Amino acid sequence: MKAGFIGTGSMGLPLATNILDQEKSLIAFDINPNATKSLADKQAKIAKSPAEVADGADIVFACMPTIESFHAVVSGDDGVLKGGQMKVFVNLGTMGTEAVAEVEATMAAQGVPVLDSPITGGVQRAYAGDITVISSGPQAVFDQAEPFLKSFARDIHYVGDKVGQAQLVKIVNNITSVTNLVIGSEALIMAAKGGVNPEKTLAVINAGSGQNSATLSKIPNFVLNRKFNMEAPMHITEKDVMLWRMEAERLDIPQNVAGATYHTVRQALAMGLRDADLSEMVKVVERAADFELPKTRD
Image (cartoon, rainbow, N blue to C red; front, side, top):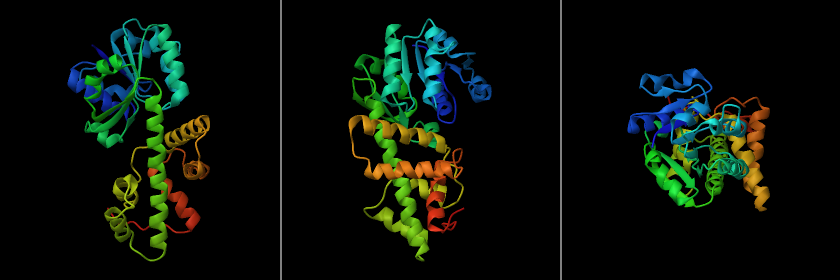
């Protein structure tokens, strides 16, 4: 099967690159021409529209940042539905159950099956082919896509045969991750304001029962050095927590702890951090505490 890729931004580019390296061919598109330059340098064919990608590929991957761009890539004037060769469509983004259900129905009317495969792990792991993929959809469609997914994923979890199930799992993962970052920031700021070196506090947390993804990687690698360069835009996190809230209300799930995380993200946006890095979430806590974590790493 010939592969196509749409959406070569900070996360999409390493995924597309890994597919190209494995398959030795790829047709790609991004609304920003500069985003596909490195693929062109490696002999990928660069399309002028999503429709052109779907006209030259059997399996099309889309890694879109917003729900609006996701719908546009599918149903826009030059969307993939206008292509003639696409046999499978794979969504790699976090779009929520409602959006992927709408796209699945639209694709089904054209006889094209959808695989829901949101990704998690971050940009650095994406380049290393080390991210995690959560997939749901018909087993036969997953079987067709899996060899391509293996080009950029270390762990692939097939969670069910219904499109949208993977979205739920990804949204659960995301709210857990952001909550870890918020509580980790609060914990280190509390101890530091009380006079304890943040490195010593972090060492205890990571050797004890409080360790989590934020204390193990995000805080030491992007906060304590004050570089704030996770390459994870705050506005994408806003989308993720909004999706969590929508699903929680739809399923009538308590929102006590995650609700506090949602409001912290909203506070970050109110502070002007919409285009900031996710790791700058610590600044929300710092402002409220009237205390800034000292830089302890280069």
